[in-house]
Amino acid sequence: MSLTVVNGLPAHVLIVHFVIVLVPLSALAVVVGAIWPGAARRMGLLLPVLALATLVSVPLATGAGEWLEEHVDSNALVRRHAELGDGLLPWAVALLLLATLVWWTARRSAQAEAEAGERGRPVATRSATAVRVVTAVLCLGVAAGAMVDVYRIGDSGAKAAWKDGFSKSAKGAQSVRGDDD
Image 1 (cartoon, rainbow, N blue to C red):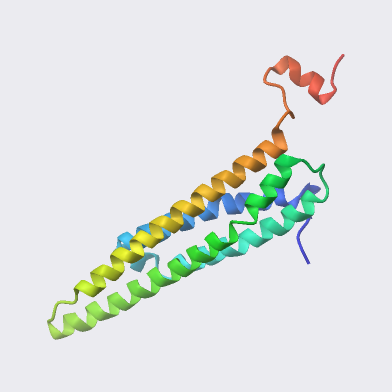
Image 2: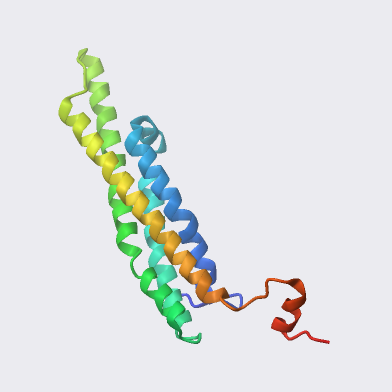
């Protein structure tokens, strides 16, 4: 069962707002957590849960968008938007995987620090630092890719919905709506 209409409006129009908010928020949280392990520890389980909510919102928006695509006039702008929208899911999966990795490594490092503190030994190693740097670079790349993709999808959707659908002047808006006196 897919969500198609909410309160008389196509569900896609509403659900995309979750995607527009959650993808950049997840991307930012993953990058902050990867660069600053203390923040990842503070976010705790919220980090992968946020990324999971992001992942769930993407196919919901895509499914509702596919329904909407069948109920609007097909043109190149609509087809381009649908094509771009299909490419967001891998980014959302990557965000979830990286969020889980950042959460798990922050949790493990906190446990290792606690154990090392009890023994009076330093924890930091070169391999741990290298893993953190590689993870941070991956997080930056995936976050940037996801956010650019969301922007491109949203821009194409706005163009598909609004191109030639409004007047730049208030006087012309009356004729577009059919309110001419």
